[in-house]
Image 1 (cartoon, rainbow, N blue to C red):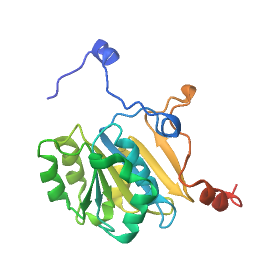
Image 2: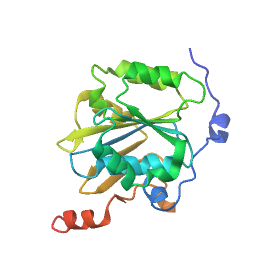
Image 3: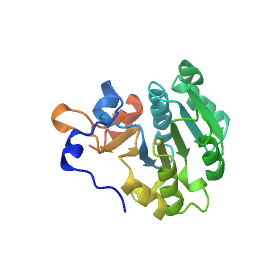
Image 4: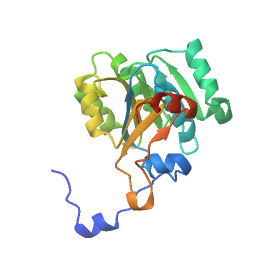
Length: 212
């Protein structure tokens, strides 16, 4: 049986949050950098660029590992890496070349392991079960896991992806070079969290001009 927490202790509890600024603050709020986030969308909509923009920004606060399961080290990934200016962050980010769940767990058990782990995409962790996801969260409670996946009919594609989405503190659906954010860290009256995030201004304008 777990330990009960008093009302007073709930009300006085302190949590470490990332002091986001600008468009990241408007879209994400001031999040804890632990737990799970979910990013999903169709192909060719700016999803990879958006994920790398987030990775680059998060290096201000934590060490990041980007597990490229879908592309691995490829020319298209290198170009996206360069497009967001990743050279500016040095060794604050590393690329994992198609590492599976077992290898990622072994990496996280080491000292000075990455604090943020991006899984792109969850569909390539073949055989992943909900129990695997729950144990990953339980065994590494101070890590932030960002899961990327394809979508189907406007939702994450697959039962596991859908369940991870429900459990995630931040959910971002990408379409037409914009990310539509739902954040549990939103404070509407302060304008923190919930704003749409524009990934590429020109592309977004051209895509949405006839859809508004």
